[in-house]
Image 1 (cartoon, helix red, strand yellow):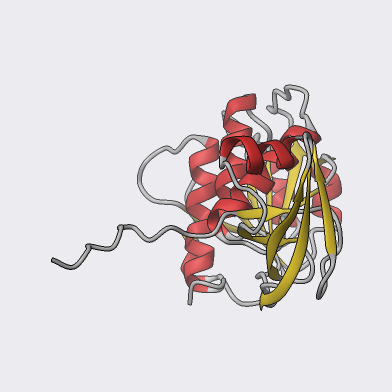
Image 2 (spheres, rainbow, N blue to C red; image 1 turned 180 degrees about the horizontal axis):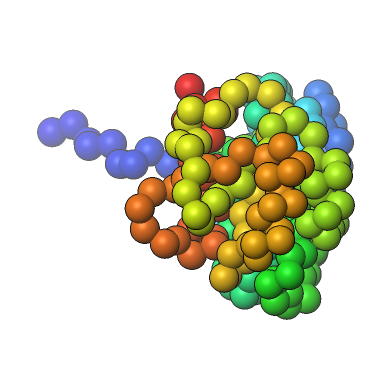
Length: 243
C-alpha cells in the first residue's frame, strides 16, 4: 500500500538576517537565531532554510557549520526578488503596550510599509520599546513571507504629521465619513487612527483643514487597534497589493 504523504507539507524555515546576502555568501549566526535553529528546530549541518535581509529578496541557504553557540550558513541560490510594497504609512496613537505589539504584528502581516506612532491630546503613551517592536515585526515577517520589514518611525506629534504627511491622508472619522474604498488610490498614502476616546473637536478640525479625507469603518464603534487593521485591510483591497 503506497505511503500517504504528510500534510500539510513541511516548509523550509524562514529567518531574517542582519547581514547583506548574495550568491555563495557565508552568514554567521549567533545568539537567539543560532539557538532557535539548532536547539528548537534541531537542524544540523546540511539542513536548508530560507533567509532574507530586508533588501535583496529571499535566498535558500544551507547550514555549513555548527558550533556550541553559533552557526555558519552558506547561501545557495536566489529564490525570489524583494517584494514591492504599497507606499502605505499607518499613523496610530499608541495605546496599551499589548495592543501596540499586536497592532505591529498584524500590520506587518497585512503589508504596511511604515508604522508611525502619533501623539494626540487624548493619547496615553506607555513607553514604546523600539527594539521589542522591531523583534515583533521581524517574527511576523518571517511567518507571513514578507521579504521587507516595515519601517518603525520615531513618534511625532499630530501637528507635525499634518504639516508633512505626504500623499493621500485618510483618517478614521467617528462622526462619519465616506467609504474608504471610494477614495483609496495607488500612490503614497497615510492612514491616521486616533486614540481611545477619539480625536478632540479641535484635532478633527485641524485634520480636515490639512486636506485629510474622513472615512467611515462601518456602523459599530471599534477599538483603536481594530479600526487601524480594518482600515489597512480596506486600503489593501482597493489600492494595495491585494488587487
